[in-house]
Image (tube, rainbow, N blue to C red):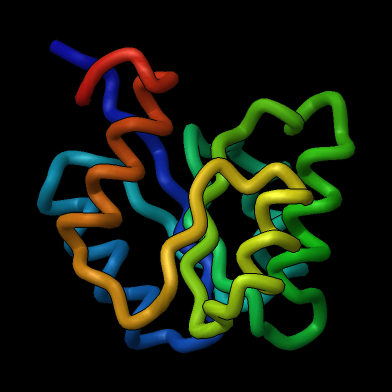
Length: 129
């Protein structure tokens, strides 16, 4: 029996966050939620997820600040992060990639595309999960 992978979904739009988490649970993942950047970091430190799905525009601490913290911390630098955001200009994409996001998926998005990115990131790019 395979070990379930844990995914942290971070978005200040609670309905979006909870809907993604619910669908991930139906796919066999352990899905946790956080509704702002500070809450996300607490959740990551409390129980390290295998992957983070991260919105950019959030109160208290935005997603780019969270991403920068993770990617500059030796303990979390290799934690895969998928940005899922309404901010979809080339400048936004470049900023996310420069901060080492693994993928950047603009909203609106399809759950199937998100699943492709999740499977690729969790498998280390080697195979589908």
